[in-house]
Image 1 (spheres, rainbow, N blue to C red):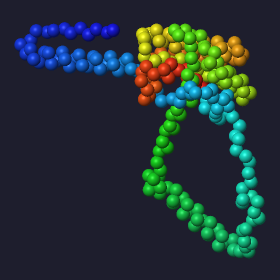
Image 2 (image 1 turned 90 degrees about the vertical axis):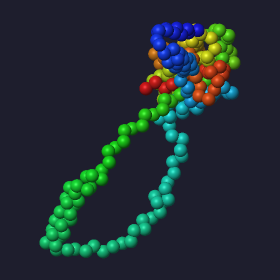
Image 3 (image 1 turned 90 degrees about the horizontal axis):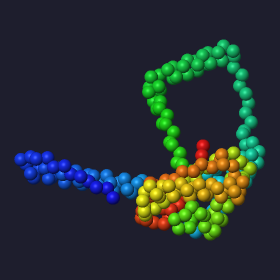
Length: 243
């Protein structure tokens, strides 16, 4: 628990001094509460049933999967051309040259008109893409980093996804999280150990290369948005696509 020490400076205005100390105490308490709660994350957590390997791949690497949209012929391709036949008109060389010159002059004048240049707007910067991620509620034995048997089907689907031929060179980040119970430092260390346990499971049981798996322990730093800091869903594991 943090302690706040107040230093008293003698002054003739006793009321002003205590008002200053009270304000400082309120600010310190607010900063403590803010740092304790951390930042909230809005991420989809799957806890009822395992996602399939294909569903996971669609979330993390959608551009690598083949399009399932059936090929269709457009109506225009199957219809005969409906353009009416027209007769060509031949004009003399002199008239054609004059017409081409006039059209070229008009085009040049239009291109250098100041109002046309002023009408151009700068291209807006590209919008940053949201991280591709999903969360799984992986159960561990109490105060342990051992994956429980009921959670292994979730990890088996992750292993199958990483074995897809089109994803053979793709990498993922395994990110462990915790709720706000207990010591913050201990939660961070435990969340990293659990992420490492999942990495070992994928390497041992699915033959995934260590070089394709990265781990990080977040502890209670990124609690779920709209959930209690002590909600069990905060004890999750998130998977990210690594560029």
